[in-house]
Amino acid sequence: MDAVFHARVRLAPGTSSLLPASDLAVVDAEAHRAAMEKYEDTPERRRLRDTAVPGMDRTWTEVVFLSPVHPHAIWRAWREITGRDRAAMEFWAIPAADLPEGTVLLDRTRTATGDPIDPREVRPFDRRTHRTALETTASNRRWLEECARRRVSGAWFHGVPHVLAPGAVSLDRARIVSWCDAP
Image 1 (cartoon, rainbow, N blue to C red):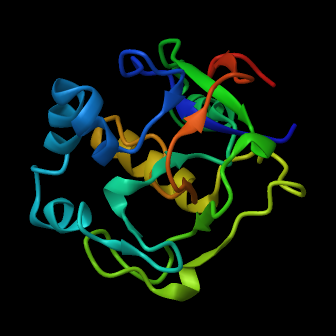
Image 2 (image 1 turned 180 degrees about the vertical axis):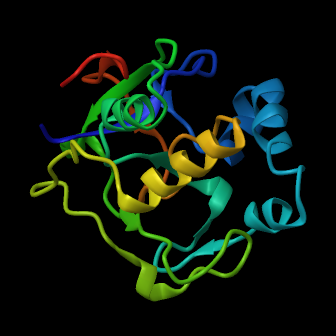
């Protein structure tokens, strides 16, 4: 499989693409407000929205975030850790070949949320050789274990590298998958 993933969300009116949060301002003011609101809860997240992405000439809110890990891997890890299933959730499985030029992979291992991104954490994303990861990362698994220990849930993709696309991502050839279903 050569896809990347994004939670299935309502698309901006008149579009068939995922848009960066900053682009929503001109096509759907309410969606833009909601997207920006999620950066208001902590000082680190407030700084995050203006964080520059090295090598892209874009900030955090000017890219589309995608996962290189199949959502089922995270769902399965949660079930293994807790013994409980999560409710069904749908994702777009987007062919890697459909990503725009200039897409990068961010694996944030040196810097923390809200800090400037270390350029060594970013590398070009190779659309031709990408293969979907069918297992979650050790960092994500530790996060899920911590969530289970604290009896909270959320931020399911914490500890997973981000595929950052500069601009709109077409969904014309995307498939819809549930994280409950094995690939």
